[in-house]
Amino acid sequence: MRDNPNSTLSRRDVRTLMLAALGGALEFYDFIIFVFFTAVIAQLFFPPDMPEWLRQLQTFGIFAAGYLARPLGGIVMAHFGDRIGRKRMFMLSVLLMAVPTLLMGLLPTHASIGIAAPLLLLLLRVLQGAAVGGEVPGAWVFVSEHVPDSRVGFACGTLTSGLTFGILLGSLVATWINTSWTPDEVLAWAWRLPFILGGLFGMLAVWLRRYLEETPVFEELRRRRELVRGLPLKVVMQGHGGAVMRSMLITWMLTAGIVVVILMTPTLVQSLFAIPPATAAEASSLATFALCVGCV
Image (cartoon, rainbow, N blue to C red):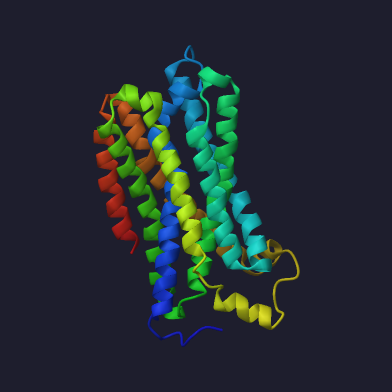
């Protein structure tokens, strides 16, 4: 179905990998930019008389809701990716991320619409989680079905580095916001800029993915009329249940490390040790850059 497994990456393979990694970086930026502004969101989207610790807890709960929605998004998008094509779902996932991110930047706060503000924020966060749940495994499948067998590890590592670069981009944008405006200005309106920018990033990613081609593996299966006729999830679990469980455990460990060390720590050190937001964001940027390099 693919080229000689010992061949090197062709120009088309490199182009596909770069477009997939860049689009993934822009989408991952949309998913994680929320966590860099949890302190501001906690003040704006919950009652002012609520204890600070409870506001932080509920804000991180909304952030976590995105992760809880990821498995469902992955299952649904993988199902249709096996039936109608990888590229279509690859484009849908980034569109499903871009629209909620843009709407987050336009949401009224608790002072304007009361309890509806955090509820709408929760709904948008769940949509983001479903989108990234389809994006990450879909991206790995997409590039691995394009490149030669001997280059799958390098391609998936490069793609993961691209996804991680989205976290670095979010950290850099957070640093820019916190150093360019005063805390009062950030609280008043500047916090919206990263989300609006993220929505625009997402639309750019959709446009970039127009230039991707369907994977040779899927095209060959479609030509041979060998696409999965049953429930794809059932077929995978019956034939590869052990591998699925191992990959889930490894992914959980990686996700836990990224969430705790890279994403949550900058916010926690601000509230616990009074470290300035700009300093916390700079430290997070350095750690994320090391993670990007390590993925390759």
